[in-house]
Image (cartoon, rainbow, N blue to C red; front, side, top):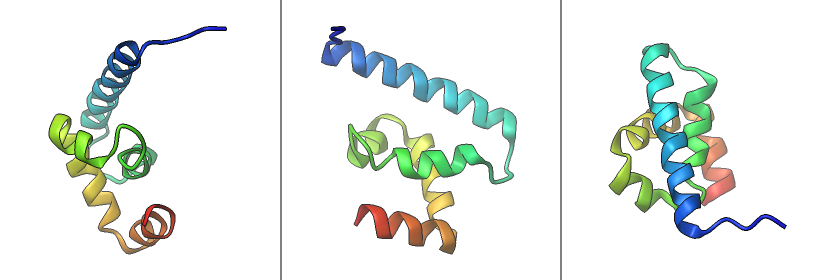
Length: 80
């Protein structure tokens, strides 16, 4: 069985976020699957407060995606 410490998990999560952030810059302003993923991901652990405090650009991307009515309805239905 492979056990990962909380600190290792957090480092891996932060590295993944940084990779997503870099990818999004290359994708530009068009809506992509990445935007949808971030809209959902920010509701998972470690939670939206953590994402807001530690990755404000990721939260801004997620907020823009969630502001679209179809995306907002899905997020509301699944995370409220």
